[in-house]
Structures are given as structure tokens and as C-alpha cells.
Amino acid sequence: MILKPFENLPSEFQNDDVKRYYDILYKKRKSLVVKRVMDIVLSLIMIVILIIPMLVISLMIKLSSKGPVLYKQERVTTYGKKFDILKFRTMKVGADKAGLLTTENDSRITKVGNLLRKMRLDELPQIFHVLSGKMSIVGTRPEVTRYVECYTDEMYATLLMPAGVTSLASIKYKDEDEIIGAVKDPEKIDEIYLTEILPQKMVYNLRYIERFGFRRDIYLMFETVKQVIF
Image (cartoon, one colour):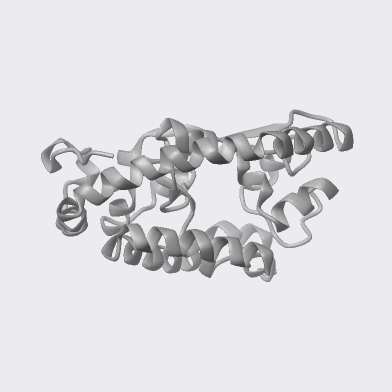
């Protein structure tokens, strides 16, 4: 990717906190180009390798529950641009009306969906977003618009790069469903996510930008695979 001039960024990015992270990435702009090339090459390889497994998963979803194979939801990526993220559907149709966040053993999740979530196979369709440039293999997991609207000035720095299929925060919070599930009052789940979980995840997301580099991305890719397997 190529960084836009700072003065051309959206108004919400025009602050000293974002500028600090922008300067870090500007010094590593060649690495950003390498990152994009790596995303294109790896996404093409993965599409070829995973096309048959994805077709099998699609059939399993279609045969096990009513509704579409894919689930779409608006998320936010580079420079605040909105896009419809694609995932294999893991919940009953209309389940998101009861809340965006899920908990461990959530009754809205289908049997096939539970299996896909445990192995993170529901994320596979996002590899097409990586190829198109809307996402990167490694980055900050994309949030829904209403959570982004609650960002602090510093948090907007995470949108200087494409959203990621995996991230340092995703690895650290691989048991997020369990954490959310521990909240006794369902009506407070959103509040706790915004005031406690999201700020903690952002610490890792911002740390990723500070330490951004090719070898760091490779490490996080392997660490993600290790977490899924073990």
C-alpha cells in the first residue's frame, strides 16, 4: 500500500496522536509495499489451495441450517472506508439482531458454525478481501462502524493500514467469547466491550504499528496457525 499525504487524511485523523504513528509508517513505507505484494502472492496461493475446502464448508452450512452460506456485515478499514466483510455464516439467520458480540456456547451459533469458529475457518472468505486490498493478512481486526465512532484520537491510527484477517490482539484475545460470556448482565456486554476490552485490544494494535515489519508479520502468521492448531 502507499500512504496518503497526512494532510489528505480524513479530519478525524488530523491529530498529534495519529501523526506520531503516521511518521513511524512513513519511515517504513517500502515495507508497506512489500506487505502488499506479500498479501497478493499469499492470497492467490491460499485461494488455489483452499477453494475445494471452502466449497465443502459451503455445502456443510447449506445442508445443516436454513439461510445463506455467507454472512455480510459492515466493517471499517483503511482511512475509515466502510466495506462488507464476508464470513461463512455460523449463526442462525437474524441472530445478529440480538447483539453483535457472541459468547462461548452462544445458543445462536449453529453446530457447524461452532466447529468453524473453533478453527477460525469462518474467516476463510476474507482471503478475497486481502486480494482486493480491502484487508491484509496481518493488521487490526476490523470493527463495526458504531464501535469506530467511539474511538479515541489515538485509536484512529489503527486505520492507517488495511484491516487484518489476524492480528496481535486477536492472538492475545483468542478467548474473547469466554471473557464476554462471563458478563452476567447481557445488556452491559456492549458497554464492557467499549470501556474495557476494546481499549486493551487497542494497546496491542498500536504496538503492532510501532513494531511493524516484514519479519513481524511472518511471526504473527505462524503464531496464528499455532494458536488455531493447539
